[in-house]
Length: 401
Image (cartoon, rainbow, N blue to C red):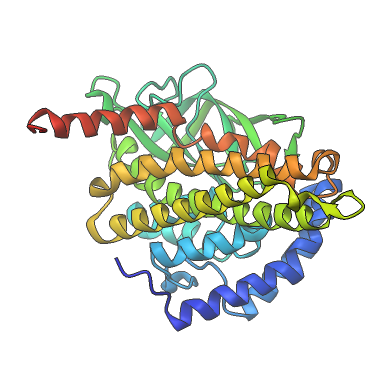
């Protein structure tokens, strides 16, 4: 693997770094005190600036208005934008739209691409992804109660979903539901596009997460599908291939998340070092003089570098050899980088003391909302078990001396 960053990518990253520093980080106090909806006019102005800089939608297809960066390149971009909670949204590469765009591009019909993909890449509408269910384990995706039953030319969808991110004011959902209950477990579910103004699509509530209900894009909803009727032409990809498509979506998505987490680590690390150097603990000493603080800084630097190299390697392998060949690397980075994220943010908060608990810095936000990194897209424990099983199978036929 060649770790060289091209001159073009270096320029793109520098431009994004400067934009995040000058335009987005100063907006963070507003992010803590206002609703997302109230921020939209100013956020839309920032988005227009990004378009004028020709940095809009970095990883999306050029034919739909994106920059067309590959997975490794977007990993570097995601690290830069991840330093601010608003980064990915303002640059048009935010979840869940990013994942929905990828599967619409791969599996959508011409009509679906025209109606949903084009305006989604353009940032004219938002979408959501409705898969997780209230009473069933997300760690076992073949267990699903939501159904989509054929009736004439339609599907009739019934079920309850939650943690449907950004459903509030989204124009459509991609819903995973059982269409073929008698098929083998991994061929039972399908993905269906459901416009959110369809009768029977009921947004019950925005779930309060760590004391924050959120709104608009910055929210996670509970959805009740009650005899929600959509035409069968809204099927995304082949019937019964919902699990396969979900894996196509989640693989790159995990790369995106991990590089965003590294961006968060970089931000927290910088704050930690600055605080250690400026926080006076006696007339002639700062926190930076303490060996335990020096140890945290050294360990954090090593953790972040290891995490970044692991993610870039996983992205390179997925890009060059395919998702199947990169399964082990994806599982490894998912739990490893999530753990590094939690350690680095926790150390930074500890160095800030009481200040770290307030919203006067970004650290308390990271601490609250990034704890979920060890849960979504596969809990740590499931990824560890999956990796261990594959490794052990490799040794079954080996004579180790």
